[in-house]
Length: 201
Image (cartoon, rainbow, N blue to C red):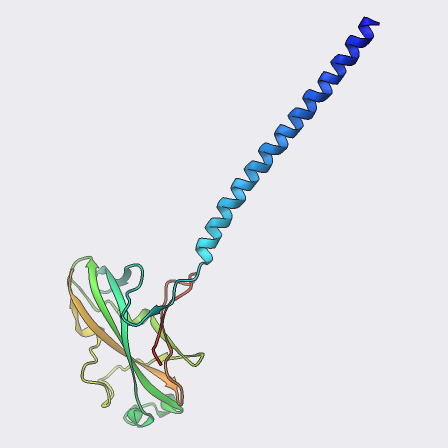
């Protein structure tokens, strides 16, 4: 009788121990998965997070790298947009390009914060704009500029940059006639959302 009771107690103890081990393993796996999922989820959230829409004059959150004669880092901030008239494109050689469009000049204040002396960093090449949902097209002028170009519009190719130097550069874009630029965009690569600046209406 004692042997039977002893055997029963042992079997019960083994079942309890196995059950305890099973519960412990499940909890560890669950905790591990939870931590892993939480970490991955946080990383995904950071990658997918859209940058805050800024106001004109506010600098981009991080310095931007541009490659001219040498690589350099710049703090950049669009400062204003000047809209033109349809007649401002009259002296454009390719009138097909000008059809149904008006010019808009975007100004960007830049300060070189890292790197040596550099020329033609093409700061404006990473800037774009939206006008009523339509993309503004950057106008490339190989020879000279438009007669209607504002006097304070400085092409970034004409500036020689050194660390600490600040200058405001400008680029002309083509916008569908009847629309105005309402957002300035800064490209942050192929996979990241662009930085956006709202243009006061």
